[in-house]
Image (cartoon, rainbow, N blue to C red; front, side, top):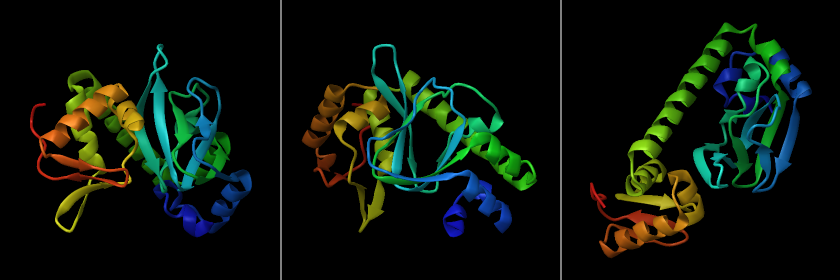
Length: 217
């Protein structure tokens, strides 16, 4: 467990004794996909360390539509505002795949971290990064159309393999729509036009970006 916790930069300065204390304070959970971990606007003070699997962070509008604001993978941790004090959750979090997590009460975690200036500095760095990421997401929703938001998502997901840009195991269109703040029908339409133009080749296993996407759609 100590080795697993070392993947979280905020915990790296801690002594072995304090890592053991965290394990005693916390609770290890192994859960399936589509499990709700945090509910938007609920009052909880737990912090989650994602040891394996993936999770999705989203907000829900008054009309019930969801907008994904982040995707978390093993090595990410969330619920960090609980370290700073009580308050309502600003977003919901649900697992996208089976996952393993260490769940720690925020006050217990704070009581240990305050003794480590390096950990508190890394907490501030994490908060700054989250704010920048959220700013970019909001900017995309406010200033970009669906096509440009989808193109940006492709850029985030794509990897290079054998000279090709690929998105392996791409999210379903419903999830793409949520992450782009759009309807599934609009995402399907954009993908259809990109296929017609020879820009992408799609399957359930992968999306191949065959050439640079156009500046305008």
